[in-house]
Amino acid sequence: MKSPLRFCFLLLLAGLLPMTSLAFSEQKLTFRAPEEGPFTQYVTAVLEEAYGKLGIELEYIELPRLRGEQLATEGTIAGELGRTALLEDKRRHLRRVPFPLFTFDIIAVADRRNCGYCPLSEMESLAYVNGMDSITKLVDNLPYEPSIVTPIDIEQVVKLLDSGRIQMAFMGDFQFENSELKDNPHLITHKLSTEVGFHYLNEDHARRIPQLTYHLQTMHANGRMKELREQYGVTLETPVKPIKRPDQLTVVGALHQGLLNADGTGKLWSLAKSVFPTFTSRLNTVVSSWQRSIQLLQEGRADALIGVRPDQKIKNIILSKYHIAYDDSIFLFTLEEPNDGPICVSGPRFMQTLVDTDQPFYRASNSLDCFALLDMERVSAVIDYKDNLPDWTEKPYKKQQLSDPQPLFVAFSDNNRGRALRQLFDNTLFEQTIERKAKQQINERL
Image (cartoon, rainbow, N blue to C red; front, side, top):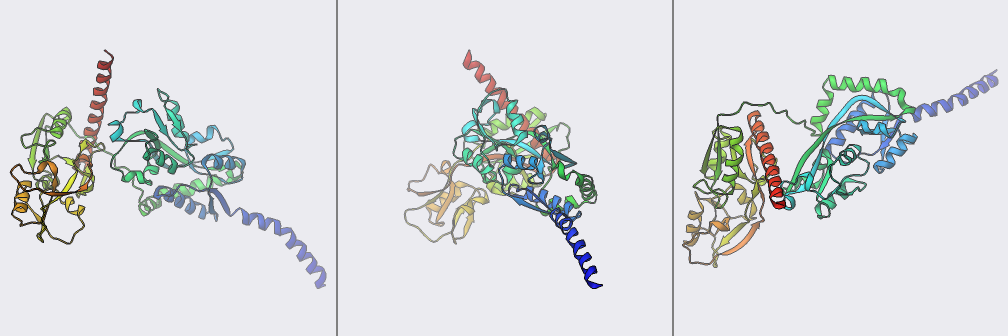
């Protein structure tokens, strides 16, 4: 009796084995591995959690973008984690999950030292990652034909831009933020478009789409996606609410010979008097010390602080998108015979971070006081710009360069009014630059 029953059980078990194996294999889906970074970590975290509710695990393999598309279309891998709707025009076997998974900006990146404000019309060479459909569409619609290089990954694009072999790179803002480019203060960016990304599955897995869409919608509605954005440091740009034209604006700056002179002349004051009056009836310019200038902005008694370096790290302020000029080199001045006195500084506090020393610092009200103290050997050194050297001194100073010239920005308060003023400033500055360039080109042809 037991033998026939056992035989039947073995037959039943043998029949179930293929089904069990198939079911197990469907609990894991493979996708092309995304680029590293907070943005892609957020996207994969969202998808892994949504698929987890279906009992499905995700795994990733390293593939070039176009090769990944091909394998996704063939069904060798399950699909594409996140792509724009342009993917559907060339890969018809991929099905969109109808939930806008993320948005990102396509930006142009160039070096301001080489091309000023770097308008696209003047760029003769550019690079972008091969297979990025949204960028390819933008490039195809350019009114000119630059020399184009399309490497297989963003690292190669970054190297081309860093080495100066191309003038401009097109990329997603998330690629820029995750690269070493974001720490380069000399770069300038222009937003080209905003794109929406979706998740795609091969048609063999299309039956999963309704359930997956439901879980994604639920995660959005209950705030789970917001929690994941915060966890991975993915912030959404704060919308700028328009403000009415201000009756007057106060722009403050610290004394900087040639750039911000005490009498209201100088390169930066000329720029301020050109840009700000386009959106205010009255412009007030104030020259003060660094610390007083910062205080006026932070207390709301000034609307903008002009001539700020990005390494100054001022609390509760935002910088203009475009840098407006370049700072001078900063030096450490000492006497021929050193002493053990403090180091004198009269400029912004970031200057103290340029010297690796255990010596104390003494803060004076202006450069002349610092150099007078140095001449009297009451301080051991002065940190300052070369243009601030006094005329009276007869003693030779030894000097050590501490910092190369750095870009200067306009700072605004980090609130809605400040953001609105910054947007007005950036837009006006860029428009004026393009207009001047166009007039210059016309004059050159005449």
